[in-house]
View 1 (tube, rainbow, N blue to C red):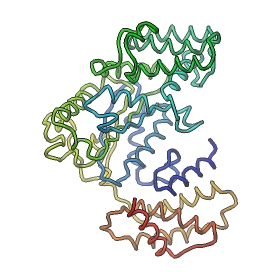
View 2: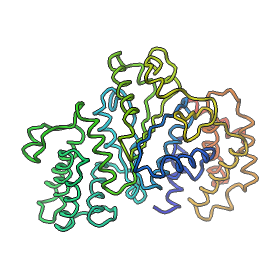
View 3: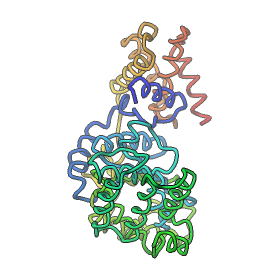
View 4: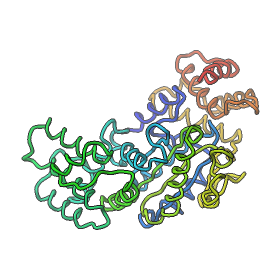
Length: 421
């Protein structure tokens, strides 16, 4: 995707008050040291290690923004990325098999994302297609059909990988068969592919999969952790450097769990921590709120072993080697906010060629940011970062229309919207 199209997407997202799906690094500040540490200590050589880290951040601290940055960094290092929201309805941590389903349901390849953006359907099918092409040709690419030679070459490598569960191998091989040129009409092919992918989500019946695909088990609670190890092995076999899994715990999800479910969730998390080294190539980042560490009824303080393994957020800016990254401890100064203003201005100039003369110049942009900053109460419940990005977008939009308003009026307009959101 071209830089001007990405710039437009960034601006459109910021107009809606949400972090953009791509291009977050174009206006980000304040995370440079942490990101450099993550590249150096974690992403370098990720194929030979399993890692888990935790994020602590209050609402509005920038967890989603950080995850967007992390995703782009992971793509730059040739990793797959999956962003999974852990909530009681879709992917509760006490049901690890559903967490596994969520990982595959949200997985993205760097090749596809750079070309097309966020996949709308069957994302793990894209991974399987790229894997077929890679094992046959050494390149990640989507393919409509595969020659018998390429299919055979890929299938032999797949079936020889004993680190993969045998049913995992069988079902992937069956998926690849649908790309052979003599297959029936497209409707039947699509139905077959959809049915195969449903196996990875625990859907369908064992009898059907045994009859049609020679499969002897379903992905379930009993084997989900084993399937996670198979996924780890498949990622490396398919030519990716690793898989970065961004777990985003829904607000207060633990507080609505029954005691038995909470205990299972804590046990599953403890199992991940204790066995993460066996998941080579996987980098797990678990983001949650400060209550996760301190709540006397639902936090990890009720599990002595878990509390010992994780620890708690420290009151200082996060470092890559820390177990817990405390986003609430990151402080921004006026100079950094002004840098954001300059960067958003540059994004506008890229998105709308020929608009340079209409936009406020750099000194005026810095003055506008300074006035916003000075007018924002330090104890406001709305974080200034949200005011800044929304305010800059509104300011530059007004300038493009020739209707520049005082910073005080822009601030008032933005705050009315943010208080309602």
